[in-house]
Length: 320
Image (cartoon, rainbow, N blue to C red; front, side, top):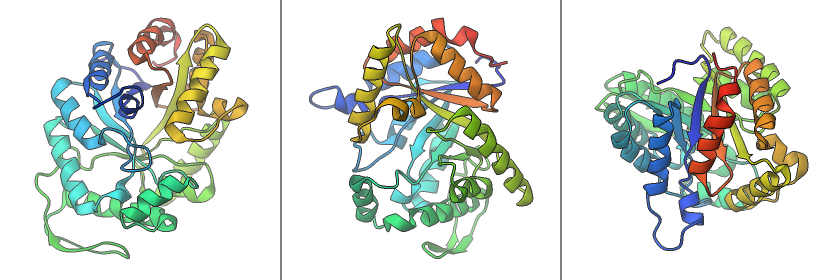
């Protein structure tokens, strides 16, 4: 793989294959994009997560299949909702995935959006009170780290308990890195500083990214922790016609999130339009301190977008 200071990743359409195809969805478009990303020397591929609210191919099952189809790219989630699984079983699943992939897992985690009714129903159905999901996630992260590094773990949390538990196999990475997707409010970035191995926001400006990452670093230092990787999750569509690119972005986000987007709201997610606009935006985030950038293309032609980005944008990014 290319040796870059700033890493590049690609989001895979595990929800798109349900939205864009009639009948049973296949893994083909997802795997093809992952394999091509590796051939083009991107550093990582990511999949999203949801059980009920936003149906898609199940995240860890897909990554397991991709572990057998790829050799070098990191295999990540953007983002995973750990509270929807029991932490002991999830630690076991992730340790196995890390082993079969040769230590390539990045677990991007989050608590989901704050308001949509479908997401609230999803958490409640899986036995997690929606308004307490952030506290459940913190216990998940604490317990899983112990299970990945210790035997005979006894844990007494507010929401989860276990006695004399050993998870085998242990992962290759000790621990598997967990990047937290969050907003920039105080409670969110403090959670990143205290529990995360990285920060993975998606709706943020370069200025907000820089300012918040400085806060995270300072808080992590006060806690005696390494804050990990400052990463950015970018939604984008590459097209010479900016209006057309914006329309694609709006339609894509609406189909994914069932929420109307327009104007500045769409731009908060990323940049849509000609190559020059994308180059300027991404380099602004690199200047703000981003060390990993993951690209989600808001277009049905995912491979075409990847090829265009590689040819028209990638050579002009300040990655080294």
